[in-house]
Amino acid sequence: MSVQFLTRDEPGFGPQKIAYQQQDAVEPGLGVVFCGGFRSDMTGTKAQALAEWARARATPFTRFDYFGHGASTGTFTDGTMSYWRGDIPKVLDEVCPGPQILVGSSFGGWLSLMAALDRPEKVAGLLLIAPAVDMTERLMWDRFSEKAREKLMREGLIYDPSEYDPEGYPISQALIEDGRHHLMLGQSIELDIPVRILHGQKDDAVPWQLSLELAEQLTSQNVELQFLKDGDHRLSEPAQIDKIINLLDALLGAPA
Image 1 (cartoon, one colour):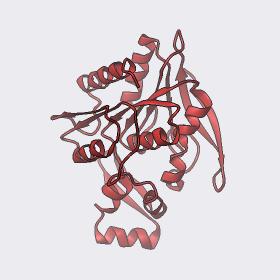
Image 2: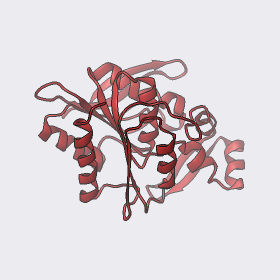
Image 3: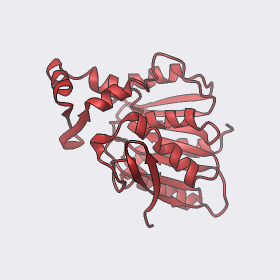
Image 4: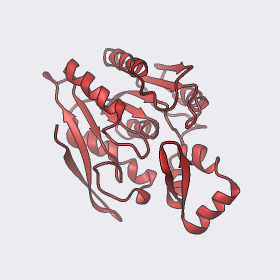
């Protein structure tokens, strides 16, 4: 399937291309959009598995790359939560004609929550996989050593060690400071849609306790949280993907 592109033209960034792939159903209906993780792209294991599932099920399915990720244009270190927050709504507005279930993985979980708030008429439900809510503060700034914080403020950029990137994730001062305008935990998250959360309890990137906090903050009464005791952050093993697909099948059949 060929990669297609949308154009975003925002002040300060200029014209940028969002890469995406879309599969149409035999008959139109509720669709699914996969929103990947930080420094990930739409060719990952979960995205590919969901594409195959959607094709077999004849369910509309869209996957895409954020600004500065994968086949999309832009320099990753120029990205901020304010800008990335606009990517999912742009995809929903431009290529998704009907309501969608957002499947948000890690960073994509936080962005999916933002998109549900920004496009309530287009988001019919959420499936969040190890959602990294408030990650710029909780999982970056709060975890950084005093030395790392000082370097970040002095130089504007540090590389955060990660098992998922041998060079470390480049984290900018702008990302941290801008992220503070989008924090969600510690206050009510006003959503009235089905939300399913799946989190591995051996996740060493996003603590599973964050999902407990998130579930408590959501105002929706249709929230279910499942833990996989032996699950890591990726949740990409066949049995774990089966769990994701089972949750998604149920969501697609659930009333909003």
